[in-house]
Length: 423
Image (cartoon, rainbow, N blue to C red):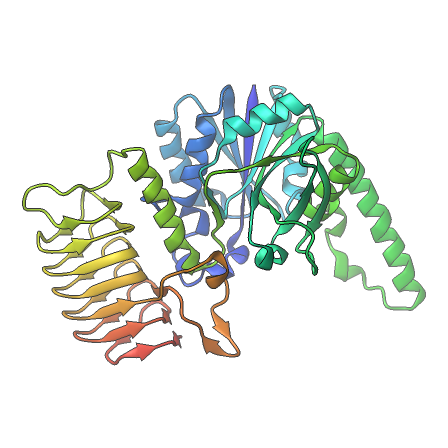
């Protein structure tokens, strides 16, 4: 039997995802027509002999309850559970804290995934390599550009044995172009290794306290719960690589992070393109007098789209949205209850829940050329060219042009805005 754990974080962790995370937790934000975390759950449900998926985070318990109830209906062969951390315990602290519940039923292998990623998720191939190599854990890596390698946890991999020889979290100098994807699979003995890592961390903290006390600088309030925090990257993976207990699996499909709100648009495109290649039945098609569809487009059954509208590529139209005559939408996400009036255009943008775009209005961002283009909102105090984002309940008046801007919720825009953050 196998199990999986998805680390969903908490409200304070999604600040870079604002203004979208002000309405909905980041893991539940829709890309490719489904919540971010749904794509991970679907991939895990296809892993052989995987019986349980556990979400760990510090959101309130009720936040994920409706979603997990729906997952139980969609994936009846898998059981689901949400476990709430009592405080922020680090990237591996919650995993270790709930070890008794994770080990219940004696799973042979335990997947761990971060929630803020999108991928083709070749999990069965990852598991096959893990069992073939027989190491304590296997990390899924992807090849990144040398110029951006410093943004990721980097793994030095032996080309012949596929063993991870060294792990460095966001190195200051070039180490490797193999980056951690935030997807792992461990043997159940990982908890013994983590217990040793916790002991080592406790020793380090005690040494630091002694040193600070000697200089009269130690404040007991500075490290509340510090002894219970465990960092997966620095405390666990680095030690596993040093002891030759970590193998590396190269993901040859797509992968990217979903850190900022702007990164949801390219993630949406990747999932829609994957569905198109797999002949996804939920994608819209050019039929009869309907709207003109180009490439991969998702239209929720309850949405109303005028037959003269032009949609695509890489567009998601969500529940109860209304798209008027002559509207043009491409490379965008239109969320629930949005009304886009006649002849408006939405390009490289996210239109938030309950928003309105007037006749001949235009909401336009800039195309994302690479993963590095979407993480920074400003540069030297100036809004950079990127995806245009309207928060919840934003009203764009007729003939108004909003370009390369981020608009917080509940704003009325009666004048053109370019490269601004509108608070």
